[in-house]
Structures are given as structure tokens and as C-alpha cells.
Length: 277
Image (cartoon, rainbow, N blue to C red):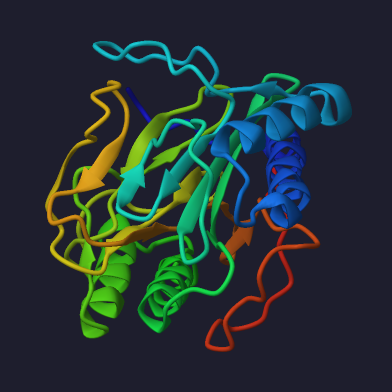
């Protein structure tokens, strides 16, 4: 499968879908607190997507080869769950961390984003992991421009995370996105500079590092539900995700919204460039 390059009209569709994904996370934010179940969050997300945003939950019924259809409208990965956690009836408790990963389809185009949430007062270690993972994502994003290679992005994320004593999950990666949920290229969150595909204007992909406080090894979740992935050593894991378009001069983050966390101070401020046809 080859990389698809989006023109200005297609980027605008992705810009709308991306913004809606960010706004869905904004909407869900006040509900993430001790005592709420991830099933309740799932229902809130589903209703908001369908009834307010007019989007289709991309995860509901999604199933690549050898996977059962995913049964919910978002992913909720709690504490040592790395990704693809399935919402359930277990209440969140004070001190938990949880990743909400949402993907909506608007007019045939996908918007995909995720954030970490602290449930009540959390440990210093949990807060630091979530913050460093967020900054690691931005270390990758800020490298995006024509002529850079995907290995440069992965190297920036990996070195930043490891400098802080964390490990990077290698079995899952970011991905191209558009009319299809998962397209080429695969965007690794580790790597060597100057390797893999060269970035060109019109490419759109996610950057979504999964970073562990312990070792990088993972395994299938204890639920044996066909989806949940957990850390092998049961240590905490965090993930953030944005959708990024390569512009003529740099990048545009498509999933920013009014409630997005502040961009780190180390990221050079720029005006998002429009992608030309």
C-alpha cells in the first residue's frame, strides 16, 4: 500500500474531522473523575458524536484481519493498559490515569486523537509520566517538515523519553490517515535519523507515542478480549496522539481544539500553513 498525498480540499475535510476529535475530548474532560465508569464515558462519547457532531464512531465494529470487531465507540486505557482498552463497568478511582482515544468519521474522513487524564489527585510519578509523554509527542511533531525522514521523528521521541528514564513501546505506531482509518506510512516512535520515508507536503499521519514508566515489553491484556494491551511488568503506561499534516514549510496539527493542553514552551511558535493543492 502506498502513501496517499492529500490536496487542499482533502486537508480541509481532515481539518474538520480532526477538530471534532479534539472537541470530543474537550467535552469528555469534566466527566473523567473518581466513580465514573469507562462504559459511562463511552456512552457519553457515542451520544455526543452521533447526536451533536454528526460523526460516526470509527472504532465501533472496527476489526482488522484476525481481530474481533471492536465493541465500543472509543478506547479507554487505564494505568498499565498501553492501548486499546475496552470500556467496562469498573469505576475509575482516585490516582488512576486513563487514556481516552477517539476517532470520528465526518463526511467520510477520519479524525483521530487521544489524551491522558489524571483521575483525582495522582502520584508525582504518574503526573510526570503523563507530562513527559505529552512532551515526547511534541518533540516528534516539531520535527515535521518536508525533507525530514520518519526515522528523525522516531529518534527525537525515543531519545527524549529515554533521557527521562522511560521506555518506548515498539509494537504499535502512528499511521497515515484519511478516508481510511489506517493508511501508510507507519510512524514509529523510535528509530535512527535519516531512515525511512521522506516527508512531503500533503502527507497526513498520527504521532501517538506509548511510553512506559518501566520496561517496554507488553503482552495481551488479562481480559483476553482480543484487544487490550498491557505492560508486561504491570508498570504505568501513557499515550498522547495528534494528527499532523505536512505543509510546504513545516506542519499543521489538525486535532487542536479550545481545550487542548498548552503546547510546550520548547516548541517554536508558528502560524499553521495551509496545504496547497
